[in-house]
Amino acid sequence: MVKKINTQWLRAQNKDQYVKQARDSHYRSRAIYKLQEIDQKDKIIKPNACVVDLGSAPGSWSQYASERVGAEGRVVSVDVLPMEPLERVLFILGDFTEAATENECLGYIGKQGADLVMSDMAPNLTGIRTTDQARSTALAELVYNFCYRALKPGGDLVVKLFEGTGTDEYRRLLQARFTKIMTRKPDASRDKSREFYVLARSYRL
Ligand SMILES: C[S@@+](CC[C@H](N)C(=O)[O-])C[C@H]1O[C@@H](n2cnc3c(N)ncnc32)[C@H](O)[C@@H]1O
Image: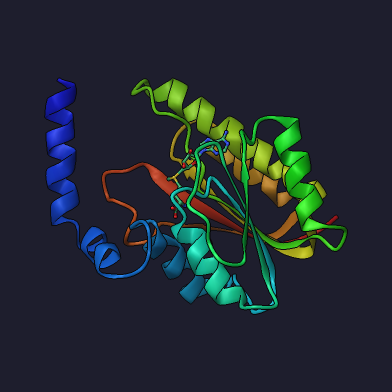
């Protein structure tokens, strides 16, 4: 069964235009095209900004963000899996659900706060829809709470969610602290996938 799923996944990967595009570019993953599309539409990554990338490995979002912020900007990235080093990217190897990881990240961000927090974190999928959904929402809630300590006023958040129970409540949670909440489903996000991104703009303390 596992072998069959893997074969199907590999076939889909090979047909996928974004996988080919990523292979022909210097980016480490097709995920880059999701962030690129959101950024091109909404202009979320600005020169000289401080950007936090949660769930960063293998690193294509961090690559893109570090190019966009430039030499005067900063990218702080976190993943529970190792990530090959990138120029101008501070990488923290750790589980974001642990307070020590969050505190280390805040230490790198510094007192002035971050301009953008982005989370492409996804839990290890069990295939049990309700469990996966609950874990994904729990991670997103942690990210929301992190914004209180990490974002500067006026800062933005991009967070991955999976459509299902709890996502409407999550949007409402964001409304308490952000001025504008938008939903984004980039072309590179596979049609079959229930994943989508919420873009929350202009954080209010
Ligand atoms: C879809 S991948 C991210 C791809 C990445 N945006 C890129 O462009 O290369 C999701 C990542 O979230 C990470 N992740 C999931 N749960 C995490 C946690 N609790 N703490 C840190 N990283 C986590 C996974 O290890 C995985 O590398």
